Length: 230
Image (cartoon, rainbow, N blue to C red):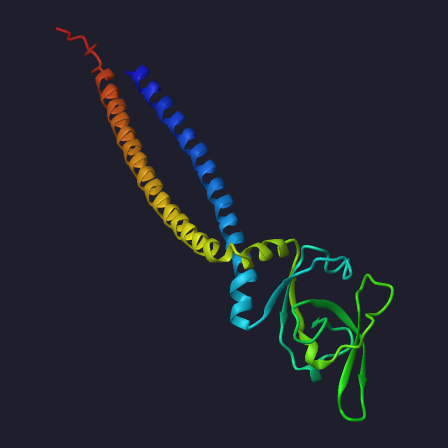
């Protein structure tokens, strides 16, 4: 009986160790998956959601003129601003020619106020030796730098291109499917753990009963050694 009890205890110990190992791997996988999920959500928010809600303009830095702060590949989000609020030191985006698509993002190094009340801005790239050739008019200003995210600019370019029509819905569906999978996986894993705990508790109860029965069987009444004199 003791051999059976020992084997049962060893089996339960091995099962417990296996459950602990699987538990660590499960939670490690959950942590990594959750981190990737949060990263995807964050990138999506920074590239698409926040700019759209704020009426801001996401752009990608393509040149090194604003290094080291804004290297190529950086996503910058430019928010509209009243040109009267622009100050020296601000980083702004302006159209190279008013009404045309090409833009430049540089730092304001000087402001000229004319007698008629108009303003013009002198700009220069942080990594450039000289200021931009032409003064910038208020009508050319697209906005002021709101925030920037390193390396994400190329992703923004891809999403804002022809892929946007099909990529965004696919990502949304994938996120919902992923969330459903994680919830279902958690429910199933919890059910399995509860089942294993119940089975282990039952085995422990049976083992305790076996030990108690074996102990009772080994107990022997002492012999009556008294001698009757007569």
